Image 1 (tube, rainbow, N blue to C red):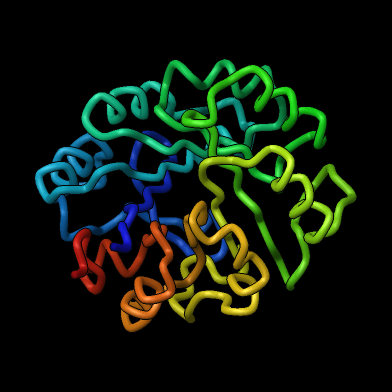
Image 2: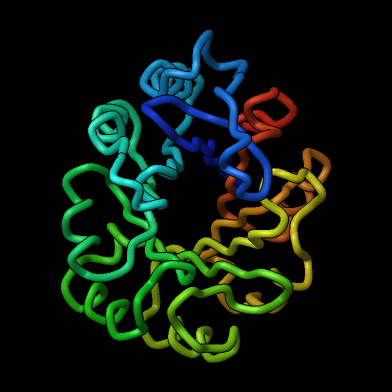
Length: 231
């Protein structure tokens, strides 16, 4: 059965909402699961509603603007296991974060090099690592690595992660539907995939029938269109 993983973006200690990375326009999150944008309150409600884990992006940490929300995240992690994204760039950053969340995302967007990815997998158990394959306009999205999507698939076949987030960045927050071509391209990793990016309510059953195990849902989840247990 497809598991829905609720998504939270944090800025200035609260959950926020916005579209496609325009962070200056983000506003406090309105969710049916809590009366405020307090992440701990939201996490407690999600647990009561049978969520198994949650995805949190610390937008301040990702921006490297001198701010962070990691102590709030650590508190949330005592309530519900957190899959944390802070824009990991290397092994040192990954190690630092292990104290604050159950699983740490290592994303192609921010990773310094493939060598750093290998170092992380050599040193730490796969249960603590989630690789995020970030895609934009059909190409692997990375600020630091010059590598194609097919070449990165070869890397995944070498390191064999337990979980792989497949994320079409341009679809995030749009509700325009997931990238079917991208999912087809990663068919061989189907059992490891956590799908993200614009998933619509009427696609949930389709993804379940395709055998996708987990999906990241933000907007459609918090407004009540998609439930934690949709089946």
